[in-house]
Length: 162
Image (tube, rainbow, N blue to C red):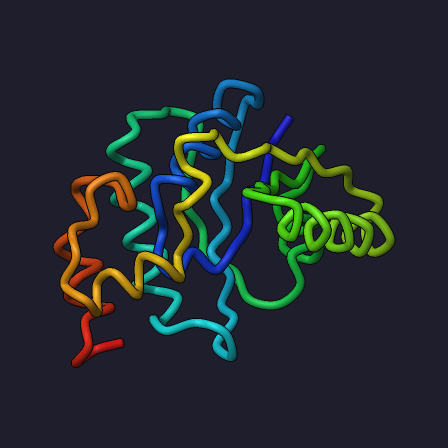
């Protein structure tokens, strides 16, 4: 079964990488779907997808691919065809409440089931927002982003660019 892990990934973090790795172990095919949601994000979809691709390549998982998409996730899932499940992640109770509502929307629009991964305890503090803040403060990103993406993320999200 194909799993679709969708988000803005603004930018892709070690938390995202952890969910991709865990999803890869559970599903035969995992698509990291990078949403073109211009109202919410700091970087263009092409840049966010490239950062996600670099991070995913670093994971060395043969059954994972990165694809940008525009519009409804349910329409994107339909365009891929076959049986799919949506993968979501939650760091805390606030995330869980949001994800529970979103899962209900997906189910009502497409009848696609979702799987919710609880964030690994060592990554609960990691978020894209925190990464952007750390970049702008010039702080270390060790443990927050996949190693081979740090320089690119600093270039894209630094004060003069993000």
